[in-house]
Figure: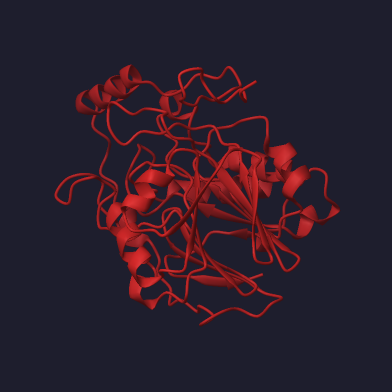
Length: 328
């Protein structure tokens, strides 16, 4: 029997009887914005930048070193393993160079300044997560990197020059040397054209190496599997969760968690582990591209407020500046 997130025609779905964002909703949202334009938002001018402190070529075996490039792109140095999540260095999150959402701030790390990359994790095929120019550039500069992608995405990534590409389904695992990579469920969708919706899978990832554990949620709405992810792959030292791209809520709720939901998901991930009080949450998916309606600086503000209401230690919430490096 096929897993519940597979459809009979070979596509994929969210299996929890939850509505997805639909094209009709997109049209309604865009029409609302034409009729009622958003107020001017100068928050991008206040976005901080920091000088990276990357461990080059690799971190110490007992370190986790996290550097935010921007959006959902992290350089995670999990001990001696160098990982990139959903890399995008292009100026626009778009199939075109001249139109589409443009960066509010330059990448926090120059693409040519990266250390040797061992693993690239791609969560799904949207243009703000899978950027063709970036894939080609990384595939050329880091030819030995392993690319881990969800089902049916391997053909595209290989066509862009990546050599070692492996596809995973939800809950599947791969051993890469001393590291174990698990593919985790997410509530989202896939599409790069109007004709290929949900033909490739979407996911998050859990990585364990040298006794340290990292979780990357990808793009996701609320779903019931965060606790099970934590039980199976945790406890996590660092969990990277999206906190932006959530308004208007009536349209974005099925596919993007908001900051309050991100904190709830973080707590669910660690519900069965005594070490939860020491786990770090990194807030992603904000402050780089203006994709949705919330003010640019609202996601970190709301994340801090939700974190405080939950009674969690301030030092374990990492809201990074572009380029900022922190060590766990």
